[in-house]
Image 1 (cartoon, helix red, strand yellow):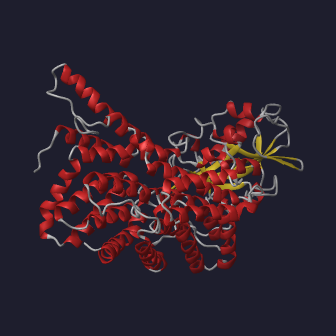
Image 2 (cartoon, one colour; image 1 turned 90 degrees about the horizontal axis):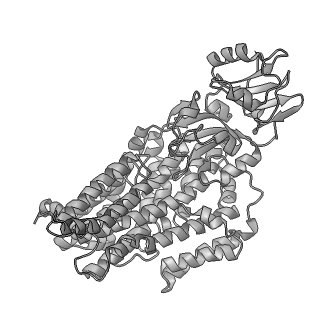
Image 3 (spheres, one colour; image 1 turned 180 degrees about the vertical axis):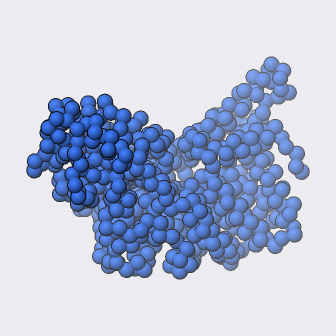
Length: 630
């Protein structure tokens, strides 16, 4: 029963390597997925060659059965043509169409007017807004759109953003369980389930309908909301103290000051760029004040004159050396605050910027990426979880979720806001919202849902039709659709889908199921169902949620088949567990979104998310058994 074929052994080795790489993120997860795909594609041709040389007895097949009409290459590349991959791609475009109209931002501003400085109202509004929205636009996109609104909500209401941002992420996961299109996980699980049903001849295994599990999703959302409003609220720490402005929040008092250039300064007559290039000091020139004028980046071409006043970011020790070497005097009794830094344009010049998943800056440094010159922006501080870095930031390798305190012109901030590498964590006034298209964009999303739910048109076709509609109606410009797609997620899906195929073809899924079934006879079926939830949840908190679904659904179906219980119930258990990863910041993209802006520790996710994960394990397991039966 436990015989391990050569194909299964190779697949398990690839899975083990993938789990390590997913968990450690030595390379980005999409590159790991691409590596999985390449490894699977190479197995058959390489072993065929080795067999010809007499090294092996015969070739090893991992993607197709020997003699199959389907080639290994077509199976391996099937992830790129998968309906799940295409649907997720289209959902990114639909979400961008809604975002470009400003509909959700306008709704958020109305919510902010209602909540004011009442933390209970703020928390309730955050959860109540993101959960239902996440059911109809991808929950990752919903958090990216609402994060600035929630951060501003906390600042205006003098609340800690830490008390609102983790609930924002968790509530988006509740909403993702409401419909088929709530998460990419649901869409992927639907396709895998339909494929397994056809291949194994199990009539009860079909692709999910739009509202297949909405009833259970509502239960999960209600229970989760009650938890976050009560126990979760007590457990969520206020890591970032309520502050009047961002310079206070980032504790910049000892790192920001103003200096004046003396008449005899050796840097008089030099450009700012040449003066900085000839210096090894850890210093940033934030803004230049000359008479009644205030200048921001780009400061490099400015010629330094006597009497120029520079706002600088540095530490006290470096400041003393800088004043002596460069002929500068410290301006007495000057406090550099948000107001001081925003006098140049009398508009918002200071913002928090989060490094987004898939950002090209991940692994780079501020120096190697030429951040200042590339974006005409100055980084004053970097927050990583609860840690604040305000010295030698240019040497720190950037990670997903890092939060940068950035000063720049309003135009530069607009460009950062439009850049997929970043999430600007404050609301930026956008004159280019296509407000006249709000009814159209909302109508298109509603039409996609209606077509998929009420007609024979499948979700991929409906979503692609809606994406085209977003462009034809002017909600999106043609060039914007490419920026709307999170290509790392698309590559991740395309790379891991063949892994599920290989697990099934080589008998690996059956082998894992055999191990579970050995202990299962001593347990009631509902306990085995709960076990599948717990195993998937633990796996998802360490690796990608989509990878968890690919690995666990074939196993769940095999376990259910061997126990002669309802396989669809086991599929749903895996799907819900993979869509709700609360215990680590790396378990779900939305957790990473709020990690830096909330100033959280890794253990905060365990403290708040652990009890919630355990609670929903029970609620989901009992709910599935009650609604679909075993």
